[in-house]
Amino acid sequence: MNISPVSFKGLITVKSRKDKDSPWIEKTYKTRCGTIHYWISDKVNTDIPTLVFLPGLTADHRLFEKQVEYFEGKYNVFVWDAPGHAESWPFKFEFSLMDKATWLYEILQVEQITKPILIGQSMGGYVCQCFVEKYPNAPKGVIIIDSAPLQRKFTTSIEMWLLKRMEPMLNMFPWKLLVASMAKQVAVSEYGKNLMREIMKTYSQNKKWYIQLAAHGYKILAEAMENDLPYKITCPALIICGKQDKAGSCIRYCKAWHKETGIPIEWIDNAGHNSNTDQPQIVNQLIEKLADSLT
Image (cartoon, rainbow, N blue to C red):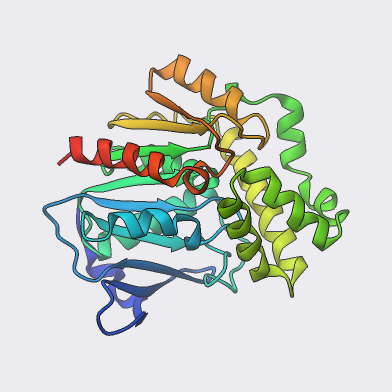
Protein backbone atom coordinates (compact mmCIF):
# COMPACT_ATOMS: atom_id res chain seq x y z
CA MET A 1 0.00 0.00 0.00
CA ASN A 2 1.29 3.46 -0.85
CA ILE A 3 1.29 5.50 2.34
CA SER A 4 0.62 9.22 1.93
CA PRO A 5 -1.35 10.14 5.04
CA VAL A 6 -0.67 13.86 5.19
CA SER A 7 -3.70 14.93 3.13
CA PHE A 8 -6.11 13.02 5.37
CA LYS A 9 -4.67 13.68 8.83
CA GLY A 10 -6.85 16.68 9.54
CA LEU A 11 -9.95 14.52 9.18
CA ILE A 12 -9.02 12.16 12.04
CA THR A 13 -10.09 12.83 15.64
CA VAL A 14 -9.19 10.75 18.69
CA LYS A 15 -12.38 10.16 20.69
CA SER A 16 -11.60 8.05 23.72
CA ARG A 17 -10.33 4.79 25.08
CA LYS A 18 -12.20 2.38 27.38
CA ASP A 19 -9.82 3.13 30.23
CA LYS A 20 -6.25 4.28 30.69
CA ASP A 21 -4.93 0.71 30.36
CA SER A 22 -7.04 -0.25 27.34
CA PRO A 23 -5.14 -1.37 24.21
CA TRP A 24 -7.96 0.00 22.02
CA ILE A 25 -8.63 3.56 21.03
CA GLU A 26 -11.70 5.04 19.36
CA LYS A 27 -11.21 7.50 16.52
CA THR A 28 -13.37 9.27 13.96
CA TYR A 29 -12.91 10.11 10.30
CA LYS A 30 -14.85 12.91 8.59
CA THR A 31 -16.30 12.33 5.13
CA ARG A 32 -18.54 14.43 2.88
CA CYS A 33 -21.55 12.42 4.11
CA GLY A 34 -20.82 12.13 7.81
CA THR A 35 -18.35 10.90 10.42
CA ILE A 36 -17.11 7.31 10.63
CA HIS A 37 -16.25 5.86 14.05
CA TYR A 38 -13.65 3.13 14.32
CA TRP A 39 -11.58 1.33 16.93
CA ILE A 40 -7.94 0.41 16.51
CA SER A 41 -5.03 -1.01 18.49
CA ASP A 42 -3.45 1.86 20.40
CA LYS A 43 0.06 0.92 19.34
CA VAL A 44 0.13 -0.52 15.82
CA ASN A 45 3.10 -2.78 15.12
CA THR A 46 3.85 -2.23 11.43
CA ASP A 47 5.89 -5.44 11.28
CA ILE A 48 2.79 -7.63 11.60
CA PRO A 49 -0.57 -7.68 9.76
CA THR A 50 -3.61 -5.73 10.90
CA LEU A 51 -6.90 -7.61 10.99
CA VAL A 52 -9.50 -5.23 9.50
CA PHE A 53 -12.98 -6.35 10.60
CA LEU A 54 -15.93 -5.11 8.53
CA PRO A 55 -19.41 -5.91 9.92
CA GLY A 56 -22.46 -6.68 7.82
CA LEU A 57 -25.47 -4.50 7.02
CA THR A 58 -27.17 -2.99 10.15
CA ALA A 59 -24.64 -4.73 12.43
CA ASP A 60 -21.92 -2.77 14.22
CA HIS A 61 -18.46 -3.33 15.68
CA ARG A 62 -19.88 -5.62 18.36
CA LEU A 63 -20.42 -8.30 15.72
CA PHE A 64 -16.70 -9.08 15.99
CA GLU A 65 -16.29 -8.84 19.76
CA LYS A 66 -15.24 -12.51 20.02
CA GLN A 67 -12.62 -11.96 17.32
CA VAL A 68 -11.28 -8.71 18.77
CA GLU A 69 -11.03 -10.35 22.19
CA TYR A 70 -9.21 -13.40 20.80
CA PHE A 71 -6.66 -11.52 18.69
CA GLU A 72 -5.82 -8.84 21.27
CA GLY A 73 -2.05 -8.76 21.57
CA LYS A 74 -1.52 -11.23 18.71
CA TYR A 75 -2.22 -8.93 15.79
CA ASN A 76 -3.11 -5.31 15.23
CA VAL A 77 -6.90 -5.01 15.12
CA PHE A 78 -9.20 -2.52 13.40
CA VAL A 79 -13.00 -2.54 13.43
CA TRP A 80 -15.51 0.10 12.39
CA ASP A 81 -19.12 1.06 12.57
CA ALA A 82 -19.77 1.28 8.85
CA PRO A 83 -21.16 4.55 7.44
CA GLY A 84 -24.69 5.13 8.73
CA HIS A 85 -24.41 2.43 11.40
CA ALA A 86 -24.52 2.83 15.21
CA GLU A 87 -21.89 5.43 16.24
CA SER A 88 -21.31 6.38 12.59
CA TRP A 89 -24.61 8.26 12.57
CA PRO A 90 -25.97 10.72 11.48
CA PHE A 91 -24.85 10.04 7.93
CA LYS A 92 -26.23 11.09 4.54
CA PHE A 93 -27.29 8.16 2.39
CA GLU A 94 -25.48 9.60 -0.60
CA PHE A 95 -22.66 7.10 -0.97
CA SER A 96 -21.85 3.91 -2.84
CA LEU A 97 -20.12 0.68 -1.91
CA MET A 98 -17.03 1.98 -3.66
CA ASP A 99 -17.18 5.12 -1.49
CA LYS A 100 -17.08 2.91 1.60
CA ALA A 101 -14.02 1.11 0.24
CA THR A 102 -12.37 4.45 -0.55
CA TRP A 103 -12.97 5.82 2.94
CA LEU A 104 -11.61 2.62 4.45
CA TYR A 105 -8.48 2.93 2.34
CA GLU A 106 -8.00 6.54 3.39
CA ILE A 107 -8.33 5.62 7.07
CA LEU A 108 -5.79 2.82 6.70
CA GLN A 109 -3.44 5.28 5.03
CA VAL A 110 -3.71 7.72 7.92
CA GLU A 111 -3.10 4.92 10.41
CA GLN A 112 -0.13 3.73 8.32
CA ILE A 113 -1.52 0.20 8.18
CA THR A 114 0.63 -1.38 5.48
CA LYS A 115 -0.34 -5.04 5.92
CA PRO A 116 -4.14 -5.18 6.16
CA ILE A 117 -6.01 -8.48 6.12
CA LEU A 118 -9.58 -7.57 5.24
CA ILE A 119 -12.22 -9.64 7.03
CA GLY A 120 -15.74 -8.83 5.88
CA GLN A 121 -18.99 -10.42 7.02
CA SER A 122 -21.97 -10.24 4.63
CA MET A 123 -22.06 -6.58 3.47
CA GLY A 124 -18.53 -6.25 4.82
CA GLY A 125 -17.53 -8.91 2.29
CA TYR A 126 -18.85 -6.73 -0.51
CA VAL A 127 -16.78 -3.82 0.81
CA CYS A 128 -13.75 -6.13 0.65
CA GLN A 129 -14.43 -6.82 -3.03
CA CYS A 130 -14.80 -3.13 -3.88
CA PHE A 131 -11.56 -2.48 -1.99
CA VAL A 132 -9.59 -5.06 -4.00
CA GLU A 133 -11.14 -3.79 -7.24
CA LYS A 134 -9.91 -0.25 -6.57
CA TYR A 135 -6.71 -1.07 -4.66
CA PRO A 136 -5.67 -4.55 -5.86
CA ASN A 137 -2.19 -4.42 -4.36
CA ALA A 138 -3.20 -3.04 -0.96
CA PRO A 139 -4.55 -6.05 1.00
CA LYS A 140 -2.21 -8.71 2.26
CA GLY A 141 -5.14 -11.12 2.49
CA VAL A 142 -8.93 -11.26 2.32
CA ILE A 143 -11.38 -13.36 4.33
CA ILE A 144 -15.03 -13.39 3.28
CA ILE A 145 -17.55 -14.51 5.93
CA ASP A 146 -21.10 -15.42 4.85
CA SER A 147 -21.06 -13.10 1.87
CA ALA A 148 -21.24 -13.57 -1.90
CA PRO A 149 -19.51 -12.52 -5.13
CA LEU A 150 -20.26 -9.08 -6.54
CA GLN A 151 -19.96 -10.11 -10.18
CA ARG A 152 -23.27 -9.58 -11.98
CA LYS A 153 -23.33 -13.07 -13.52
CA PHE A 154 -23.96 -14.73 -10.16
CA THR A 155 -27.22 -12.88 -9.41
CA THR A 156 -30.61 -13.50 -10.99
CA SER A 157 -32.75 -10.72 -12.47
CA ILE A 158 -35.47 -11.19 -9.84
CA GLU A 159 -32.89 -10.87 -7.06
CA MET A 160 -31.65 -7.63 -8.58
CA TRP A 161 -35.21 -6.34 -8.83
CA LEU A 162 -35.89 -7.13 -5.17
CA LEU A 163 -32.66 -5.52 -3.93
CA LYS A 164 -33.81 -2.18 -5.33
CA ARG A 165 -37.25 -2.38 -3.72
CA MET A 166 -36.61 -3.41 -0.13
CA GLU A 167 -37.78 -0.26 1.65
CA PRO A 168 -41.56 -0.76 1.19
CA MET A 169 -41.18 -4.45 2.02
CA LEU A 170 -39.33 -3.73 5.27
CA ASN A 171 -41.90 -1.08 6.23
CA MET A 172 -44.58 -3.76 6.24
CA PHE A 173 -43.09 -5.48 9.30
CA PRO A 174 -43.89 -4.38 12.88
CA TRP A 175 -40.65 -3.56 14.73
CA LYS A 176 -40.86 -6.45 17.22
CA LEU A 177 -41.41 -8.94 14.41
CA LEU A 178 -38.50 -7.46 12.47
CA VAL A 179 -36.16 -7.86 15.45
CA ALA A 180 -37.29 -11.43 16.15
CA SER A 181 -37.03 -12.52 12.53
CA MET A 182 -33.64 -10.87 12.06
CA ALA A 183 -32.17 -12.64 15.10
CA LYS A 184 -33.42 -16.02 13.89
CA GLN A 185 -32.35 -15.38 10.31
CA VAL A 186 -28.71 -14.58 11.01
CA ALA A 187 -27.79 -16.86 13.92
CA VAL A 188 -28.46 -20.32 15.34
CA SER A 189 -26.61 -20.01 18.66
CA GLU A 190 -28.11 -18.27 21.69
CA TYR A 191 -25.11 -15.98 21.89
CA GLY A 192 -25.47 -15.02 18.23
CA LYS A 193 -29.22 -14.39 18.49
CA ASN A 194 -28.88 -12.35 21.68
CA LEU A 195 -26.07 -10.28 20.21
CA MET A 196 -28.18 -9.42 17.17
CA ARG A 197 -31.10 -8.44 19.40
CA GLU A 198 -28.78 -6.13 21.33
CA ILE A 199 -27.46 -4.59 18.13
CA MET A 200 -31.02 -4.05 16.88
CA LYS A 201 -31.79 -2.05 20.05
CA THR A 202 -29.62 0.70 18.54
CA TYR A 203 -32.49 1.40 16.15
CA SER A 204 -35.42 0.70 18.50
CA GLN A 205 -36.30 4.40 18.91
CA ASN A 206 -35.90 5.14 15.22
CA LYS A 207 -37.30 2.44 12.96
CA LYS A 208 -37.06 4.84 10.01
CA TRP A 209 -33.26 4.97 10.46
CA TYR A 210 -33.07 1.16 10.34
CA ILE A 211 -35.33 0.89 7.27
CA GLN A 212 -33.45 3.58 5.37
CA LEU A 213 -30.09 2.07 6.30
CA ALA A 214 -31.06 -1.44 5.22
CA ALA A 215 -32.79 -0.28 2.01
CA HIS A 216 -29.85 1.92 1.04
CA GLY A 217 -27.47 -0.97 1.67
CA TYR A 218 -29.39 -3.29 -0.64
CA LYS A 219 -29.66 -0.55 -3.27
CA ILE A 220 -25.94 0.19 -3.42
CA LEU A 221 -25.26 -3.55 -3.47
CA ALA A 222 -27.40 -3.88 -6.60
CA GLU A 223 -25.65 -0.87 -8.14
CA ALA A 224 -22.22 -2.38 -7.47
CA MET A 225 -23.34 -5.60 -9.16
CA GLU A 226 -24.71 -3.68 -12.14
CA ASN A 227 -21.32 -2.02 -12.60
CA ASP A 228 -20.22 -5.52 -13.68
CA LEU A 229 -16.60 -5.05 -12.64
CA PRO A 230 -14.19 -8.01 -12.28
CA TYR A 231 -13.92 -7.71 -8.47
CA LYS A 232 -11.06 -10.19 -8.72
CA ILE A 233 -9.25 -11.15 -5.52
CA THR A 234 -5.61 -11.79 -6.34
CA CYS A 235 -4.14 -11.96 -2.82
CA PRO A 236 -4.41 -15.00 -0.50
CA ALA A 237 -8.08 -15.43 0.37
CA LEU A 238 -10.60 -17.63 2.14
CA ILE A 239 -14.38 -17.96 2.04
CA ILE A 240 -16.16 -18.98 5.24
CA CYS A 241 -19.84 -19.92 5.23
CA GLY A 242 -22.20 -21.36 7.82
CA LYS A 243 -23.93 -24.55 6.73
CA GLN A 244 -27.21 -23.17 8.11
CA ASP A 245 -26.95 -19.76 6.46
CA LYS A 246 -30.51 -18.73 5.55
CA ALA A 247 -29.77 -15.23 4.29
CA GLY A 248 -30.87 -15.11 0.68
CA SER A 249 -28.93 -17.55 -1.50
CA CYS A 250 -25.61 -17.16 0.28
CA ILE A 251 -24.79 -20.88 0.28
CA ARG A 252 -25.52 -21.19 -3.45
CA TYR A 253 -23.45 -18.09 -4.16
CA CYS A 254 -20.48 -19.33 -2.15
CA LYS A 255 -20.48 -22.72 -3.86
CA ALA A 256 -20.50 -21.05 -7.28
CA TRP A 257 -17.83 -18.53 -6.22
CA HIS A 258 -15.53 -21.27 -4.99
CA LYS A 259 -16.05 -23.31 -8.18
CA GLU A 260 -15.48 -20.31 -10.43
CA THR A 261 -12.36 -18.90 -8.73
CA GLY A 262 -10.80 -21.72 -6.75
CA ILE A 263 -10.75 -19.58 -3.60
CA PRO A 264 -10.64 -22.06 -0.69
CA ILE A 265 -13.90 -22.41 1.21
CA GLU A 266 -14.63 -23.63 4.73
CA TRP A 267 -18.14 -24.77 5.68
CA ILE A 268 -18.98 -24.26 9.35
CA ASP A 269 -21.23 -26.74 11.15
CA ASN A 270 -23.95 -25.39 13.45
CA ALA A 271 -23.58 -21.86 12.10
CA GLY A 272 -25.90 -19.46 10.32
CA HIS A 273 -25.29 -16.21 8.45
CA ASN A 274 -23.21 -14.76 11.29
CA SER A 275 -20.95 -17.80 11.55
CA ASN A 276 -18.32 -15.81 13.43
CA THR A 277 -20.81 -15.36 16.31
CA ASP A 278 -22.23 -18.89 16.14
CA GLN A 279 -18.85 -20.63 16.05
CA PRO A 280 -16.28 -18.01 17.09
CA GLN A 281 -13.57 -20.49 18.08
CA ILE A 282 -13.61 -22.23 14.71
CA VAL A 283 -13.71 -18.98 12.76
CA ASN A 284 -10.93 -17.49 14.89
CA GLN A 285 -8.74 -20.49 14.15
CA LEU A 286 -9.35 -20.13 10.43
CA ILE A 287 -8.51 -16.41 10.55
CA GLU A 288 -5.41 -17.14 12.59
CA LYS A 289 -4.24 -19.84 10.19
CA LEU A 290 -4.36 -17.48 7.21
CA ALA A 291 -2.85 -14.57 9.16
CA ASP A 292 0.00 -16.75 10.45
CA SER A 293 0.77 -17.90 6.91
CA LEU A 294 1.20 -14.27 5.85
CA THR A 295 3.62 -13.21 8.59
